[in-house]
Each structure stands twice: as structure tokens, then as C-alpha cells.
Image (cartoon, rainbow, N blue to C red):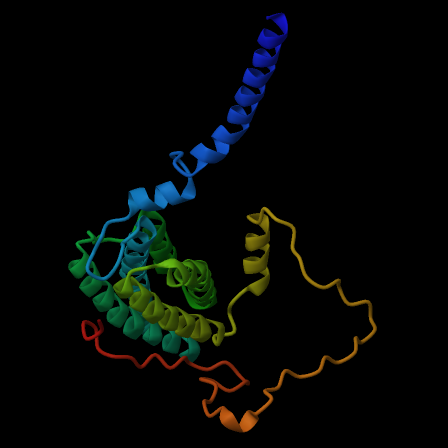
Amino acid sequence: MRRINGTALIIAALVATVGALAFPVWSYADRSGTGQANLNASSVATQWGPLTATDRDLLVKVRLAGLWELPAGQQAIERAPSKAIKEAGDHLVVGHTDLDQRARDVAAKLGVELPNQPNEQQQGWLRELSAASGQEYEYKFANLLRNAHGKVFSAIAMVRHTTRNTLIRQLASDANQTVLDHITMLEATGKVDFDAIANEAAAGATASPTGPPPPDGNLPPAPAPVTPQNPGEATSKPSTQPGAPTAVNTNRPAPGTQQ
């Protein structure tokens, strides 16, 4: 009897151990706080596909960008002493007038509320620009706006990559073209401080950079070009040719005519 009881205890202990090990794996998929759970909780169904919190945030970001960058561009047209800054301002006005209309059209269809004034930080940037003049104004204009566009660029790319909503995907594509055009024009002013941008990004980085080792003074062997096996079969052309930066082609259908 003692032997039977001892065997039963051993079996019971083994079952309990296996159960304890299996429980976290079994329960993980349903555990609240996981990325999948958060995605599902933030999403609402629409006829254009699920609409997530990240999708809605992009709509707000696009709207906010227009609320401060359009008046900044108008101010540059009126006040900037150089042609390059005026041209960049012109692209900001045209681009955000168009993009804002697209964002409002999408928000109306999806039932997303949008802000009607810039946030506090953006209002501060506008005040900073208004208080500057001459070369200081040009430097602040180019760098405040280039930095803002660069930061939103990655956010747009992530939404374009992950969204399941066709309206948001199209808006992200439109915003990508507009932001790239504005970055190009701002850099063409020759006033952008790339060292400051790189140092700010490095200060906020949490991971060590990766990539090939730094050059040691010796030229590495030239890599072989990537070439198709049957080049005659490909007929498309690159959207832009390598060379000096130029304005990005932002031609696209009128707002409200897509999907």
C-alpha cells in the first residue's frame, strides 16, 4: 500500500510540474497587455478595413502638421530674404493645403475627430519663427521644419507598412510623397544642420548601431552589380534619376476620388 501511495504521489507531482510549465504557454495568447490584445482592443471595424489607434494617430499627425506648417510656409513666402526659402515655403503651402483636404476627407468617412489648432510645441515653433529675422530666421525655418518632417517620415512609413485600412494606406502614400517633397526643398536651401539632426537622433537611440566596420584607409574590392538575367524583359523606369536633389513629383488624383 505504501508503494502504491508513493507511486501515486510521484505521478501527481509530475502532472503538477508539467501543468505549471504548460500554463504560461497556454495562457500567453489570451493574456491582456500583449501586442495582439492591444491591437484588437484599439481597432474598430469599417467598410475600408480595421481602423487602429495608430491609424487614427496618423490622421491627427497629418492634420496637426498642416495647422502649423502651412502658416510657416506662408510666412516664409512673405518674409524670407532668399529665393530658396521662399520656394520651400511655397511647397509647404501647396502640399499641406492638398494633404489637409485629403486628411479631412478620410477623417469624415471614418468618423475620426481632428484638432483645429496646432499643439503647444508647434505653436511655440511658430512664435520662435515670428520672433526671428534675417539669417537667423532662415536657419530656424529650415531646421525646425526639416526636423519635424524627418520625424514624421518614419511614422508614416510604419503606418503605410502595417495598416489594414485602405483609406489610411492611401493617405499614408500621399503623405509620404508630400513629406519627401518638403524634405527635399528644405535641404535645397543649404541651411539644414545635418550634424544637429544626427546628434539629436543619436541621443535618443537605445540600441548600438550596426553595419560594416569603419573604413581603415584601404579601398575595399568593388562589389559586383546586381543585374537581371533577362534585362530586355523589364520595361519600367525609375521614378527619379540619380543626381542633384529636386522636387518630388506629387501629382495624384484629387482628394475624395480614391477608394
